[in-house]
Length: 253
Image (cartoon, rainbow, N blue to C red):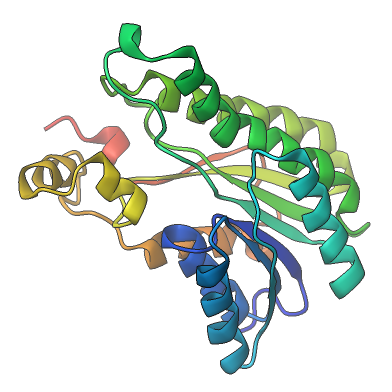
């Protein structure tokens, strides 16, 4: 089944991890993609893989903290594919960590800009570009800062919790235009960014035990949830915090 046949989608943070897995899955389901991240070589590899499989994708490298980059992405969707139906705003960073009094203002601002301000900038340009029939915006938040507190992650927690508030406001503001807006909250996932949190066996065991399923997700599992939210299967779903967290939010053991 081509759940996204002929739909045009922007995916940020597409060079690796959840973003890359989602790009491949969306392409398999017929979406035409604009993929972005900072590393051009990895985007080129992704586009080549999609194209070889019979899909359509173009890449535009850039920084999601740059307002002009978001404008360029939506312009590319319109100019190359004729419009925009879906955006998966997935790019982010763990950012500045450590004891909160030791976090610099620069570190705080960089984390908030990359994770939260970029989400605002994405919406600012994507919403006017969405086709008149409506569409779906998806933002990657986190269980961290929403249902769980984590020490030494104040900037990350604040930025990801802020995304949930942004999503709820956008969902109410644009629901009448049939623009659905949802937050996707993954649990611990086997990505390069997660490994930056800690890649030794002790840390991985700690993360596994945070989840009721006692394991870490693969990026492809999170991508399946993004596919649902992007598709017409979720036609009456908006303003949600969609937990794809392996039971992290309810696990107390």
